Length: 453
Ligand code: TYD
Ligand code: MG
Image (tube, rainbow, N blue to C red; front, side):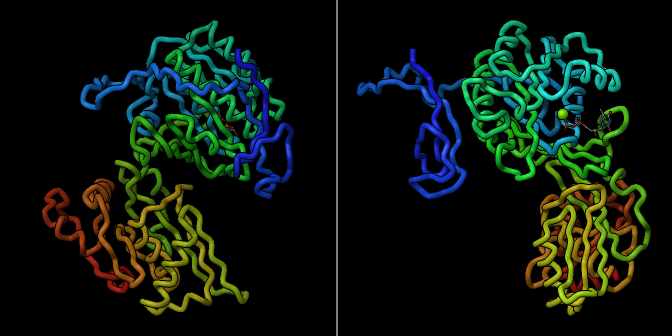
């Protein structure tokens, strides 16, 4: 049998060393050594037999993959219609954002008949029981264990034969063949590799929880993204109650769907009508507040954007963007300055997407631009108007995708007027279902501001 030993490998150039080094002697990079288990074998010069069957692409038979619902609609949507049996799913997010809560709720509602094994390395079974009681979880097929040794977990899975295993969290589990500490890149990678083997070998679905560390990439879920089938991120502002579940990788579905939850005292509650929720409590006819229509995956959503522009008291104006890309905001302010003639260089600007959401769609540009202009001129945009459009560097308003969906959502929520790119007008004219809605097309930012301010 092949003997295994551990080696330290430089992640930059592949240099191997038997002990950890701060600086790589080959490429001179610092802190690049990661421990890995290496099988020592004598290399044979003969090619291996290659037993895997080779298929002609036309002869491969496809069968629908077996999926089961998580019992939580928002989560099913993000997964592309439920969990695929035997898949390896990573749920990442900041500590305390609600990953354990979400997965406990999934354990309760999972629509399948096998056992679910919840392995916690962070809490004792009693602590989990306390939380489960609060969430009203009584599923008789749910097994709990508090364990951090990977070999022991492997043994438990082998003994109990669950259909779904939840590992909470990957940073607490360690393989005792490695000397590095739990949570280090080598441990996290090795354990995930082991889980992948167990899952694929026995057709067990494995859900891994991974905390995102402060530094972001190092030892966080990022290093595992390529190994797993699906990567979900659970995000939100910790002091706000909304949480967004987002797929950043999905081998079994699209990656732009999001699910929206609210954290309450009874656990996470699905938000069925996000537009209504996001707009509730919105200030009416106040300068700086604007409503946009964004599309996340297949779902349109109306969101409020707020801007506050005020004279700067220091030499350097301050700019702050929450929920939108900072650089995008700077760019749009430059467009306002150059193309519309607003003297923004003497002004601080603060932009906020209400509800703790993050938007990165160019279709929101016009709304962001309008909110800044509205605050600068201290003139309110009509509360019944939705703004849609991408803004280019010359101040032109460019056509956006899925315009019908955005308009239909605005109509459904009861908005009376919309400003959209003139490039989208032709298509809109053919829509009969938007009766009574005042839709105006604009060529550039100047025109849009003339209409609304
Ligand atoms: P948790 O699921 O432990 O986060 P994670 O596993 O991502 O670290 O969630 C922790 C927070 O959620 C905690 O600060 C309290 C809050 N919470 C509620 O508000 N309501 C609830 O019903 C539960 C269970 C938790
Ligand atoms: Mg947790």
